[in-house]
Image (cartoon, rainbow, N blue to C red):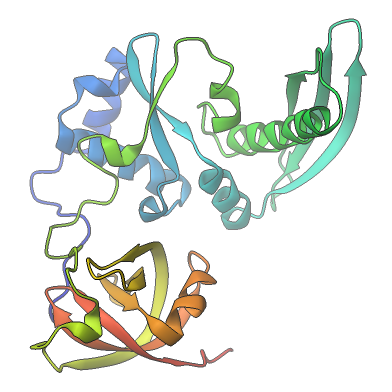
Length: 281
C-alpha cells in the first residue's frame, strides 16, 4: 500500500540488551537518549506482547528517577493476551487499622498461579466515597496480581496516587512518545476530509486492525474521529471518520478487525468512505 509510514524506524536503534544494561545500572530512564527511551518502551511492550500504540505505560518521576508505570490498558491487554483469569479469594475489613483489603489470585492457561492484595484506607469514609474505596481495593488487587504473574515488576496506576512526591508524566509529554510518527502521518486538518478540495482520489479497501483513536474537530468546528489502523503488512495509516461514521468509530475497540474503504487525502491520511461487514471464520 502506498503513502504509508512505518511506525518505528529501526535505523540507529540501540540493541535491547544494551538498553536493559543501562536501565539496570542507572535505574533512571532520563539517563537514556530520546531514541533509547523509545526503543526501551517498545522492547518492554514487545517482551509481554503489548501494543505500544495503545500507550499501555506512562512515565513517573519517583525519588528523582524517571521510570514506567502500568496503565489500565496494560493489565487489560495482559489478561486477554496471556489468558489470565482472576479470582477474588478474600475481602477483609480491618476496622482497627482503618483498611479494606482484597486478595486476588491469578491463574494462567498453563496453570501458573500468583496472589496479590489491594488495600485502601477507609478512615472517615461513608456512603459513595466508601463504596468507591471498596471497588478501588478490588481493582488494585486485580491489576497488581496481573502485573506480577506477567513478570512486570512495576507500579500500577492505582498505586501511584498514594505515593508522596510522585510526579506523573504522560508518555505524550516526554521525548519521545511511544508512538513516533511524522507530521505527515498525523496531520492537523484545517478542514475536514470532505472539505479538502484537491484530495487525491486514490481509493483503497481491505481489513485493518484498530490500534488507536482520537476525537477532534476541524478549525471550522466539524467533528471527526481519527482512527489509527494497521494493515495486514504491519503498516499504519489514519482514517478520518466523519458524519455518518462518527458514532461507529466511537464504538470501535482497540485490536478490533474492521473492513473499510478509504479515500486518500494526503500523506498517510485517508477518509473513511465505507464500512463493510467483517468476515468471520
